[in-house]
Amino acid sequence: MIEVSHVSKWFGDVVAVSDVSFSVGPGVTALLGPNGAGKSTLLRLLCGLTRPSQGSVQVLGADPRRDPALFRRLGLVPQQEALFEGISARAFVTLAAELQGMAEAGAAAASALHQVDLDPHDRRPLATYSKGMRQRVKVAQALVHHPELLVLDEPLDGLDPRQRLHLITLFRRLGEEGRGVLVSSHVLDEVERFGSRVLVMAQGRLAAEGDFHAIRELMDNRPHRLRVRTDRPHALGAALLASATVVGVWVAGPAEVVVDTLDVARFRLAVAPAACAAGARLLELVPLDDDLESVFRYLVGAGARSAR
Image (cartoon, rainbow, N blue to C red; front, side, top):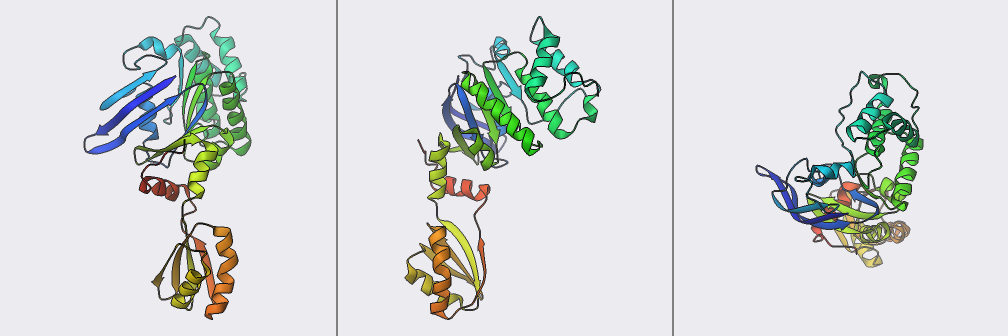
């Protein structure tokens, strides 16, 4: 459904996307990356909203910059919010259906709003809706014309946990029906629940791709970095090296040791006996890289390996 070949996009001196290639078929594909990784620029390229500086993009066999008919087969949920705030959700989604040339636009709008768990009979203007409700209106207008391919930029942002689960279930069902669903997120737990193939973006590059379990394996095999505060950092560092539970140790201050380990659970069991053997007091143990940003820094530093 999507073919991206050696695509780059730059704005002046800023490179937003750098030499990215991948393909997407039916089912759910998650585009995972921290904020600023290039996800939104890549989705704009797929939808023809900007042209690549180099490389080529094919969506459903067409060039999205040259074939307007493509947009009858494509549904887009942009990250940006631009709703007509003075009208109701049903009027807004009905307008989207009419622009797509649907004969029963009102009925199609009601059905799309039901799919995202919104009341089609709610006459309140969109200006009164919460962020989560407005997000679901955006999803409804993308669904209303039954597109073959959905491109969703952070569609779960601002939703409460129940509605998040509802939309995740909806996206998975659409994928099981044979539609293409490309959904971006910077939240690792959300991607896990999609149970899908994952494209990992970092600093404008494709850092890894594969199913979720392959990506998790790649992430879990990275060295984990922890900071240990102690009154005897040199002695504790030596004892930890002797315990063979770390792959690197350095004294980072008068009361601080930083360690790299491949097995956090084993290290946690070993650190207290090592401190006892060194005659050192343990004051604090803090993970330094348990967030998504550090995972992507590792992936890029590791040479953009692919978990296929």
